[in-house]
Length: 379
Image (cartoon, rainbow, N blue to C red):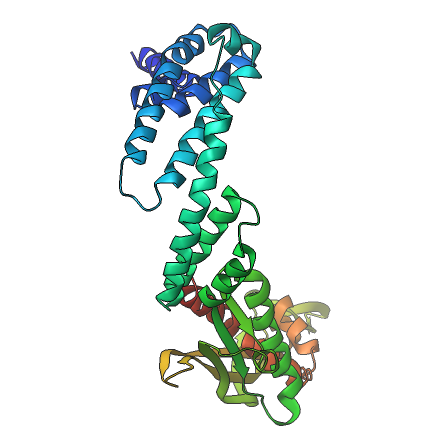
C-alpha cells in the first residue's frame, strides 16, 4: 500500500512538472504569452513533445487576440500612460514571434507568426512624450518619493526613444533628488585609542559602501558632503563611554587527595624492607586574571533640516581577556595532569590597549550593521 502511494505521488509530481514545462499550466491560468514561450522552450529541447505542440497551437492565437484586444482598450482609454502599455503588448507579440521563428519545431505549428515592427515603433514614439511629461509633473511635486517615480518615467522615455529631448539630464536630476543623502559623522576618540576607533569607523564605512548597496541611498563623509547642496540625514556615531584594560584578579585554594594509594616510602618489618603506600595530598592555588574592556557606541540618525533624531540606539560591547596559572604545596601526585600543566604556566601579558579596544568593538560592529540595514532598507 505504501509503495503504491509513493508511486502515485511520483506520477503526480512528474505530471505537474511536465505541465509547467510545456506551458499547460500557464495556458489554464490565462497567461497565454507565458504559455507560448514555455511551449516553444520545451519544443526547442524536445521537438517531438506532443503536449508542448498542443499548448503552442492553442495558446498562440489566444495570446495574439487578447493582446490586440488589450491594445484597443488602451488606445480608447484616458490613461495618461496608455502608450507604455501598448508598447509592452507589441513587444510581447514580437517576442513570441521571434521565439517561434527561431524554433523549427514551433515554426511547423505556427507557420506565420506575426511581427508588429511598425506598430511598435509608432507606439514608442507616442509613449516617450507620455513618460517624459509624467516625469516632469512628478518632479514638480518636490518630494523624494515623487522624484523616484519621475526617475523611472524618464528611464522609460529614454527606453522608448533613446536620447529623447533632454531626458538624460532629467534622469540624472531625478536620481539625485530621489536619493537619500546621508552624511556620516564619526566623533573621534581622543588619545591613544584614536587609531583603533578610526579602524572601527573604517569598517562601518566599508559596510555602507559595499554591504549596504541601496539604489536610492548615498553615504558621504563630512568632507564629501561639503560639495552637496544639501544632505537629508546625518548619521552620528560616538563612543559614549568605554573602559579598556580594567584588571580583576581572582585566587582560589583547594586541597586535593590522590584517589589511589601511592608509594610514600618504605620501612623494615621483621628485618625486611617493605614499601609503604598511602594517599597523598596537595594544596592547589589557582590564579585567574581578567582584563576587561567594555564600551558603548551611540548611533543616531538626525534629520538634517530639523536637527532632531529620527532614530537612536546604544550598543554595548565587552571583551574579556583571561590568563590562568597555578602553584601548589604538597605532593604533585595528588594533582591531575591538567592541574600540573596549569602549574607550569606563568601569568601572561595582556594585548596592547589598542587591540583590546578593537576586540570590544567587534560585537558592536555587528549590532550597528543590523541597525543600518533596518534604517536604510528599501528606500
